[in-house]
Length: 123
Length: 172
Image (cartoon, rainbow over the protein chains, first blue to last red):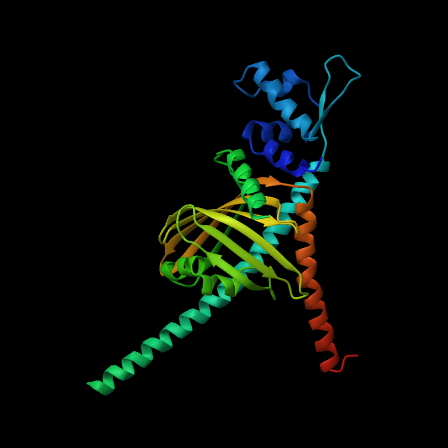
């Protein structure tokens, strides 16, 4: 369980799996329904579903024979939280970088001025 | 401890999957020439000045800027908590592209999350458009708490500053 977040990120790293999740946001679907937009074999789709299920991103019903898939949002919340925190870390760093670059530029132009003055004095 | 770190980050790298999609992309335009922005990312004395959230300092900041070269940064929050980080440069194309993998370490030196960062520096009429692409390679359950803790580190100190200002301006 310690690597739950890793597993979620791994599961989300694939465009087919993200498309499957996107489809499930509008409600339950059977494996056949989920497979229909993709030019992919059923075993390939099943493999993707297993990855999503292992990551806790989807659950499969036991009641009906067609075992509908549905979205489970818990792990997505964890990822969203992580991404949000990390983004804030970078936004803050970039604010500082922005300030720092402005300082560097100011220093740079002052140095050039000094050199220019020195040159003029020499000449 | 360092052997442990090496194992962790090596495992992280081998687990990496190439993909055209990224977990997080952040862009920013800086009003400075590209060479200067690139320098700010690759020279220790510059990097230490801006890396990390507001109010943080970097008492340790070591960059071995070559493919395979090590990165070691200890970030210090305003409340005194130190956040160590280690990493490896993977690609350096001056002054346009930087790729590195970084790992945030827990107090035992184990990686809590490994992230591959690709930084693209593009010239834009004297300014620099920077694109940061972040791909999570590995993240443990502690990762969100870690980042939350870091945020608490600076918001608390800002709150304190706010209180102090209130006192000075006689609002209390």
